[in-house]
Amino acid sequence: MSDAATGYTLAELCIVAAAEAFRHDGEILAAGSGVIPRLAASLAMKTFNPDLMITDAGAFLLGEPCPIGQRPADFHQANETWLGLSRACDTFWSRKCHTILEPSQLDRFGQANSSAQYGGLRQTGAMLAEPRGFPGLSISSPRSFFVAGHTTRAFPPGECDYVSYPGFNPARLARGHSLEDIDIRRVVTDLCVMDFGGPDNQLRLLTLHPGVTVQQVQDNTGFPIAVAGTVPATAPPTAAQLAIIAALDPHQLRATVIADNPPGEPAGQL
Image (cartoon, rainbow, N blue to C red; front, side, top):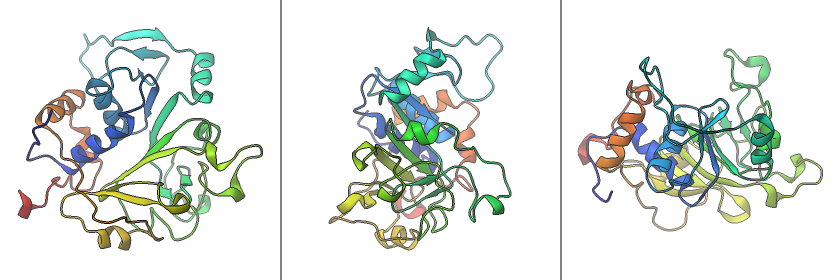
């Protein structure tokens, strides 16, 4: 898979970038919430991390990822074993589950909001996922994030309007926990790839998507980000990766995630 493809979309570039979050996980449960995260986990399992475990979003671990969307009537998913609630909880609390989530906000601490639109709960005009068990899950297992629209609203100057997931903020840590318990692996947006590996867990720029500048990322982030030297470009998909993505998403739901489904490379770079 060394041949870079052309003609790919920004969503497909983000799927490949998010899949990298699972590269070194080995045998761990991958949980992707949303189209891009789910395709990313499945792509990682189908390529460089075959030990990765995937569920059917129900009670079974799968030997083969299921395509997303409506499936043929004669489709049979590749159930490998049963994953009951007790086994699932054992997995979650033992740091053997890596989730990629789509928050509405992510702040400078790595705290995420999945429960309210911008402005807090009283301003919410759409129903979002509740915190549910994520506060406990996210302090007991690694997590990554995907943000489809990288803006200062999604990356606010202050804290999130509602904190659904803990981050590197000592003031909000649950009793008995430390910052070492926080494990945020990767942040993929429609502009770039980042992590929290900067000084004092500062958000750090890792790669830029084709045509995007450092200044553009900073202008769309409500707080300073760490930039060390020249920032490389995000690796493009290969033709083999695009074929796997197409098979996993036959109805092209990935085309609905980023506004107007833009190409992965600006026209001048094609």
